[in-house]
Amino acid sequence: MKIFPAIICAAALLLTGCGGEDTESQATEDFPTRVKAIKVLQTDAPLNLSYSGQVVDRDEMQVQSKVTGSVVEKYVKGGQDVYEGQMLFKIDDRQYSSAVLQAEANLAKSKTALAKERVDLQRDEELWRSNAISEQTLANQRAAVESQLSEVEANEAMLQKAKDDLADTIVYAPMSGRLGIDDVPVGTLATAGSTPLATIGLVDPVFVQFAVSEQEYLRISRGEKQSNANGIPAPNFRISLTLADGSSYPYYGEFAEYDRTLGNETGTLTIRTTFRNPDSLLVPGMYARVEITGLKIPGALLVPERALQQLLGETMVIVAQSDNTSAIRKVTLGEKIGSYYVVKSGLKADDWVVVEGLTNLRDGMPLEVTQVTAKDMDFSFNPSAEVFDVESNSNK
Image (cartoon, rainbow, N blue to C red; front, side, top):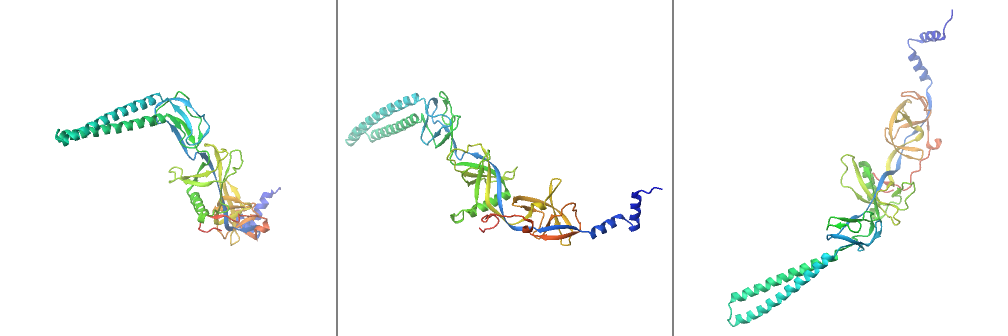
């Protein structure tokens, strides 16, 4: 009679007791898994933030004519750099020249009439003193002089306006900067105060704007305020740019503006930084990577990269508990620093995490733990010697 090995195994299990699970558990307890564990590192960690930013004009203005008329001459072309007060366009000035001549004639006529009224007033005053005319007649003549004087003043104002309109037929640059290529051609009918003739934007410096979360805003704001304390910037507090081709922009930036409210839908705050742009390399509309370095997270928790495991899109570590059993913990990570990752949640400062012997470990398994150090495992952690504390009011 042939006996199958499976039956023999089953019989053996029955002889050992009332269930295989107890036997397996006993065997596991007799042979705990050997692992190496390292204590979670708690220290001040450098905080480097990175954002997608966009270059925008620091100042931009639309050039408009103050008078209505056709553009008859252009002194510039699109894309040209201009200075404040430079002539840009000429508006047809024929009607405005005629208006000046008409206003001059009206003023001369009113001045002649005023001179006549004053002569008449002088004559009436002599007649009144000799009782040749009534006081009412004298008063009427004085009123006539005042009326004519008002007309002269009105005509003087009309002449000044006509001269101003004539002068405004030359359109000047309201600021220094670079013209857009959307400037209008000769022959365009410009309506006073409404027709855009060109756009001028300041190219040096420029803004680079990006959006940050509420938590990141608080860290950045604290770091900026402390870096400017007593007028002495933090030595490693930097705002830098990486351009679309991967090259580093040669100038550091400065914080310029913070929006006054968080976005209702995004929950983010828009920040503007300013960068020098002497070579006009940064063009409005272009995208760049904004890097903020020199901040720090005080008392951050860090674990070695070797302790991390990925399962179904989540990051796990195995903690060697005080009773020498394993416990699986889900963690949320921050940035990588040397051989370590910042842990945002999931661990405590006194936890020990397994870094060797992870294979086939499950929750609740007995462990034979060897405690090791970073030096034993050749783990490196070299935070900047001078980073800025964004959580407290101290600069180290």
